Length: 148
Image 1 (cartoon, one colour):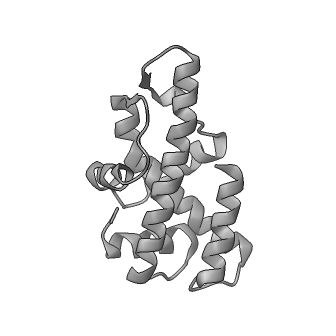
Image 2 (image 1 turned 90 degrees about the vertical axis):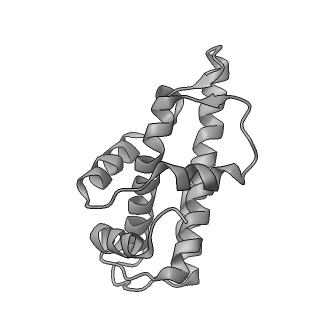
Image 3 (image 1 turned 120 degrees about the vertical axis):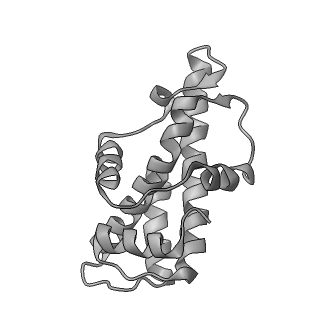
């Protein structure tokens, strides 16, 4: 898992006043692995287009909104570790290019920002939501699949 259950619960409470539990953690961990991989696949295309064999931070398709969400995550009292993120990515199809140190260092913050964004999307879809259910998770992920 990408984070301890208590960190996960606290992050969702801070980001969107949502109550989640350890059963939701696997769903979110799987979501994060897929979305980070999707971002890296696009970054790989950018790096190849620019004739490089390493993916650097500017290759990542980080929008203004995601950049702001990264900053919001950095202000929260939750820190994610790099190794669990790398371990989750290892189970996905490999990339052709190496990931640069700057991208590697960003991955925990990117994962945290995606959690914050996911929580906020859930709350935006249903402002009265307290405890997301399967249909909420599915709708939120569908939105991310359209954008990332």
